[in-house]
Every structure is written in C-alpha cells, then in structure tokens.
Length: 189
Image (cartoon, rainbow, N blue to C red; front, side, top):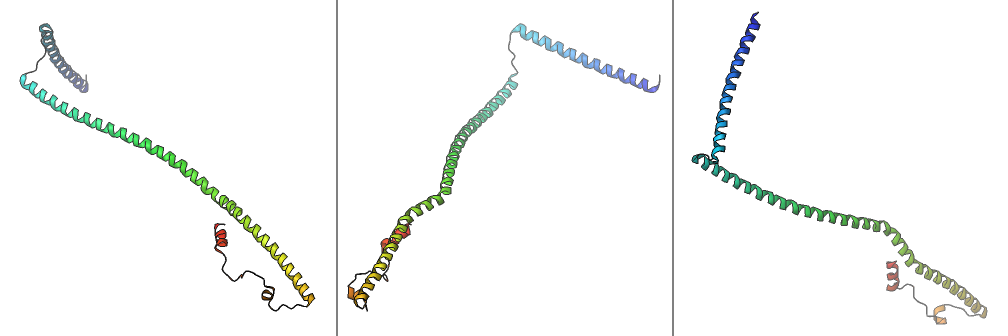
C-alpha cells in the first residue's frame, strides 16, 4: 500500500467514526422524542409551554394579529381604490368612444361643407342670375324702344336737347347708393 491509500483509509475511518457518533446522537434524540410523545399521548395532557415562554408567545401573537389587521385594512383600502379606478376607467372608455364617434361625425360634416356651401351658393345665385338676365333683356328692349322712339321723333322733326325733362320720364338715378335689400341678397349669397 502506498501512502495516499493509507491516508484515504484513515480519512474514511475518521468519517465513519464521525457518522457513527452523529447516528448515535440522533438515535438518542429520536428515543427521547418518542418517550415524550408516548407520555403526552398516554396522559392526554395538552402541551403547555412554560409560563414565561407562553407570555412571550402571546405578546408576539398579539403583535402579529395587529399587524395582520393593519394589512387587512390596507388590502380593503386598495381593493376599494381599484374598484373605483375600474369604474373610472370604464367611464373614461365610454367617454372616449362617444367623443371618437362625435369626432368622426364632425370630420364627415367638415368634408361635406364645401359641397354644401357650393350648392347653397348656387341656389342663392340662381335667382340673382335670373333677375340679371331679365333686367338685361328688359334693358335691351328698352334701348330698342328708345331708339325706335328717337327715330320716330326725329322723323317728325322733334329735337331732344334734354330728353328726360321734355318727355317727363321718371327714371331712377343710378348714381344713388344701392338699396340695402340688394346688399342683403348679395351678402347672403
């Protein structure tokens, strides 16, 4: 045998001896616990800790109960907070849905506004165009009538130096300001 094998054997023997001591100690503890357990079961007496230890346990239990109540109060408080926040979140989501729908509706209205204004302007402008065409037609007719009357008067030998005073025509003065009604019609158009 060489020296390393001898060292290994002595190390193993030492470990075996240590394990036997531990095993013996554990056997003694198990035997003591078994006897105590047998005595407790046989006597049917509940285990009562020593009075000084019981007082410490009671104080610690009381402290732990107070801490537990504090934690329970905090849990209830936070649960209430969470429930309120959940309700607020639901309300905000509903508000967001409503505002989104309203925004989409307003966007649609804004997209249609140029068409609506163009149509309304065309509707309001149509009677004005008709009136202008009617006035132009009437003006042409009146000018034709004036030329005809002037020709007939010239043929009869009547000279017109100031036609409005001699003929006593009641013509409107176009140098006056336009009537407020005409401005109103144009401003609405």
